[in-house]
Length: 267
Image 1 (cartoon, rainbow, N blue to C red):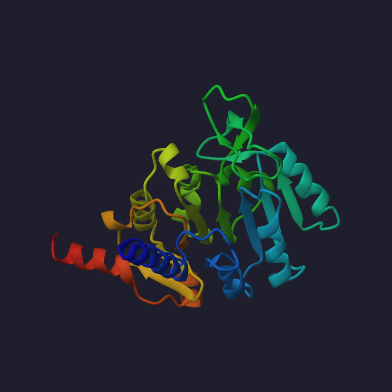
Image 2 (image 1 turned 180 degrees about the horizontal axis):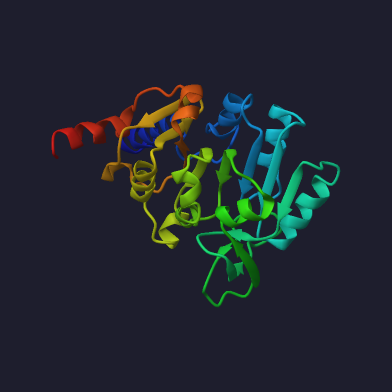
């Protein structure tokens, strides 16, 4: 009995420490997601909400930044897209694109999430019953269509398609036309066979820094290590040099620091 209680206490301690690092918490008020908006609020003029669901993130941007910001919401689930249109009917600076965002344009099959506003719908090739056909767009194609040359902040919560979205925006990153991009890393990446390592490789190739969002601020990860690949939910941020000055990240801590030391030692 003592051992069971001790192990349970250890688990609860681990869970608490994870939440303090912005890991394994889906609450945007507590995991650093909304803190990113507050930190950048004075420089956010144009934003994108990729995987907008019912528009809560967009509403937070409007709340923190004010009416001067314009936001493009990209949402493939037709039920959610309708909800967003109704929600922001009076907000002319909000544009809704009913599509999935990926690395190519065209059409794709989309598996609807169970229940309205579930937020877990995803691109799929399976024979699931709740399937619908959706349009595919890339970040580059949206910019061409809307005449956008720069995004200050892009949020991507697209159920494992985040790396595909990055690949569909290479020219924008190459020209530093994305100030910051927040991507949600979690177990959905297993379904699409993606790894956090790809984020670091993409960031390095395009001159961006990788940060982790926490409830207390942002930490810069100096590089990738296998120990980071746990598929526990966290928000990673790709930041250009200009926006890095605003975010003022601290140095890597915890597992990221251990992995950096291991690389230096050739382990």
